[in-house]
Image (spheres, rainbow, N blue to C red):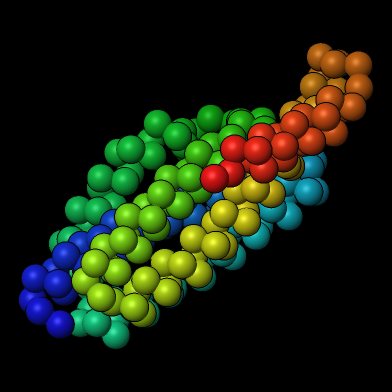
Length: 189
């Protein structure tokens, strides 16, 4: 492994680590919310996000340890960049409805997903199959959760509307889920 390769891969792995660490922190705050407890399906999904993100962070740390460690200054720089971006997604002091939490999670997981696309491309370009495989596994985990979030958010929106007397029934969720599923199938190239 060349010094240039090590430096590039370490920088990008640090960025990926920072992205998932920041999302994890937000997800853990969501699990503490009383609102989340009102929607068991959403709470179960957010708990799955938490365990998945923890596993991803651990796998990234193990990769770094096996490949020369982690440059603390690179990691801190990555965390600062991600925190600046994610501040717009997650406001730590606001009390959101669960549907808004799930919307923010969906957005953040899409950011993590595209970040894995980029990291995987970098790993394959440098012929680092171990890192490419790690990216592939983590990307598959995220896409599964993103799809589930798209389904569950429809149910939560309908329930929140119904709970607040803003809609007569929760029937809209079933049709929204079907249409969303159709959109993904139809436009999936």
